Image (cartoon, rainbow, N blue to C red):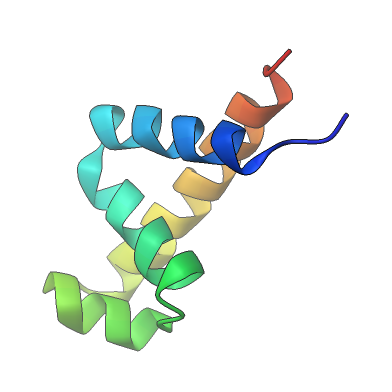
Length: 69
């Protein structure tokens, strides 16, 4: 089952409503091409927090996209 760009965008919007910082981490990493150090600097958070947010967001988005009909 193929996920469309729209499916990913909608899932990312749901994540942003749930936790906006985690959504920002995804956007900066995936769309902005920033590495963890750069994301930490932009968001003014620790690298450990960036890693934790990324792992959570990635798992959350995976689950959301599995539930797309």
